[in-house]
Length: 138
Image 1 (cartoon, helix red, strand yellow):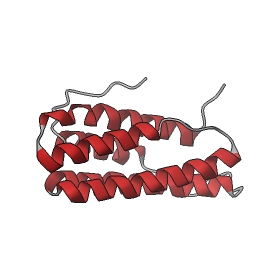
Image 2 (cartoon, helix red, strand yellow):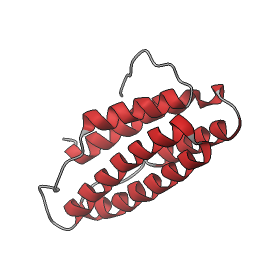
Image 3 (tube, helix red, strand yellow):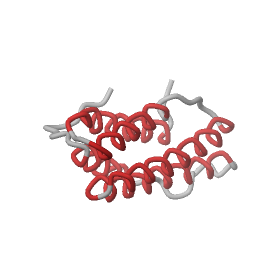
């Protein structure tokens, strides 16, 4: 079965962000709690169906996750806040594309910049205390 572009982008982004935020336990206080909450939120994004109806549901999940990640970033402040804000914007762009797909716009509107999403996921992981030597997906 062929994976849709939206699903592939989601898997790559969520996978990268999970890898990036796994080591959040290395930092302390509010920053640690925020990173743990961000990681938990990203894990919740990995489940979801396919098809037009699922696109609408997943769009809402991605939009909600973006809001939660942005809020957790604000709690942590500093570099976590700025990285979380950028990554949350990427998630909102993906949600917007999924909404377009669910309404029958098969072109999906503007596709998210996956290169930027990956960089923002990496930055978020580094802000949470993960010194990455690279990413593996799958």
